[in-house]
Length: 480
Image (cartoon, rainbow, N blue to C red):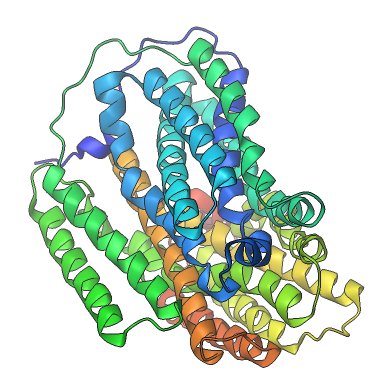
């Protein structure tokens, strides 16, 4: 029996005749905004903390609650599109995102900002889920690969311009404008989606997995708040233990339920596929946790440890995304020549060393050395993530792609949430609940480098032939 999830059921559309290229541009706008708001806050944290009277080391919740909201809401996308129509739901998601962005900018206290960020995540999750569906439904498969490459570049632009935009607006205007800039983009995209997106031919009333949604959603929420409590000054140890303990128990029950339910929210049976399990669950999750922490820690060290302004920190850190962006164009040739196993086994120790190497930076380090180092880190980070991302779907059957996409997206965002929460918690513990010193950041970079290095044990279990039909490496080997 084939297990199908209502969360990722394919919405049925009327065939589109000659869809406009403005359609993928509209989807790219949604991807860009979702990615931007996951990264733009980082360099603004000191300014937000000063305005709302919170130490920056306790502001990780502003990032993790956004990511957790993405995780919890994303599985709803397919079911909502089946029930109400993709075009209607996508436009609704854009309006939710615009409204939430306005509320973020108007927030007068920390918890109002947290709630508004959660609402932002809801809109971003629906845009991310449904955007991919409309591309696959509107264009032939021989065109979707190139289209998705450009859309993924929009997602990569978030880390590229996020720190710079956040730093510039925080320094010269106000941190509130990092949210206000979303409003005109979201409203323009909503108008384009209303006119360009295909219409639903007939509602599909698949049952919604409400028990699975409650289990997964509550488990994720408890995990996020538990991780934030670790970073919070004066949080009771018993409360932290209860939150994290309940999160682990509920997520374990959710996993057991999803493996046995007829229409589960998440198809965990996909984790039985070896390349997916190695490339993400055992290996990719570790290097995602280690590598994602740099985005959170580096701007804070530059500002609070080295005394830089937000715009100076953003100007330095954004070059990592430039390196990542450039490297994406060379990845097909690199994987074709060496294969997934050799690339990952070679690159993992290198990128782990680069993470730990941030501990050697000082306030007196010349700017050109810092820029070159961060740029190099961006290149090797791109090699790591592009390799694991492409390997993860290499053995996924075509009829499993929708369910795979849902599960991969949730696991990825969960790893990012854990990364930021864990980094904030360790930073607060090292600082004793007070202001972190430069040495605290240095210790943490070494720890994150070791976490990244642990992924190597998983990649050593790959074979040279794994993912060969994606990379083309096997065809080259057969002709040698």
